[in-house]
Length: 307
Length: 291
Image (cartoon, each protein chain N blue to C red):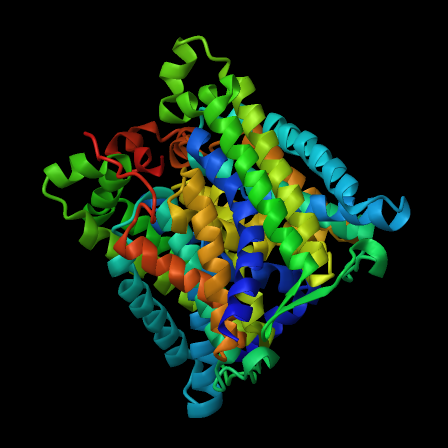
């Protein structure tokens, strides 16, 4: 079985495989931010910090402790979630732009601290050895991406998810309905951080080298771009956003010089002409169901929640 | 030693304050964190550098032209990237601002290359003045003097002129100001122009101070200036000045007592702490939550 999976990888063009794996890594990252920003409505500009924490925890666990990769993934997610809950506790009292600035500051602090710690090898970064795996890396990435999609989708339609949406729409009204905004916000922050931590761990092991400077403000913006591009709060939108923004630099490679220039201009145009993102306000599940002629299911409300 | 560091800190802080003013004014009026502001600062530095190295202009004249250039740039950015988003969610405008910022910094990288450019030695008559064991360079004095002058001018415009009155009214209540016959679009353009001019002056001064102008100088300076604006209380003009100077002084002292590798974290640690204990900043007004 393992052999079969291994040989299946060989059939795909390595370059295309690399792009696909990068998309797969971006999916849990973007979905994590989607829970915080899209679902709960809390703007975070420091998502890369959690990715960085996950990446370094996983790398250090592998190098110093020699733990198996599967365990590392879980540990790095949990550590990131713990840090998320810890800082979320005080800063989530802030709202809107103040929260955005605070998360930005937090990410900057994490970066500078990692740049000065011995265990993260300071500014030189860490080389991460290839872990011993049961199946090739792309399957892990695929598995994590699918699991995170399922997880966030189930979150969307759960009691917990509805509480988060209520907070997003109107915090005071939600509070009046008996939802404790502080507790729910910290939890959603921890969930977002958990997914980012796992994404970071995958990133570290797939790339083989991590440097604290890789997880700066621009990385956070990149992830935010994926969430906003697809449409805030929409899971299919986030996945498509992650795919487009990860693949875009590859397609723009022929004009490598102008890549960032075009990227910046595209962001502006997209926002000016479609301020809610590509799929913002589009009921994807409903459209798909209608296309399949199964309109009846739509009344269950699952589709409506995609908004 | 203490006074030496204090002067260094104030000079650095003045440049932060100049940039922070643009953030705070724009935020005060349209509640937008103008992430492209740092890039306007960078553009100002480059225009100043070009005028001084190639046209051999006087430093003050070059700064004036850079300020005019950035005024146009700032107004243009608002027109293209923000105006149509005024009624959509804040997040869209924020992303658009980030897009502008990426666009401008990569444009600068394409035009000027990735390496740091320095001003020619003749750009500024650099001399050291001794007061006991404290050394003050003429450049530091010039930075402090120019910043003070610009901030006084800004205070005058905001408090004594008709357009300044319109600015204050718009930031108080956007809709009511529009109903009172204020041309809100013009006020916003004017605000962007004012803020950008100050950022450009800051850019030329910072370029001289560190003798380095790079395509990515806007990012960190912009973030720190924003931290300064929040520290002072965003939306408050004296707050931005106070925040900038405080931040500059703290940073210089932090470096002096041996935390130089944590330099960039100092600003943000202060920022996070201030937001936790006084979310409206030092001079900010309390915002009442309304149902």
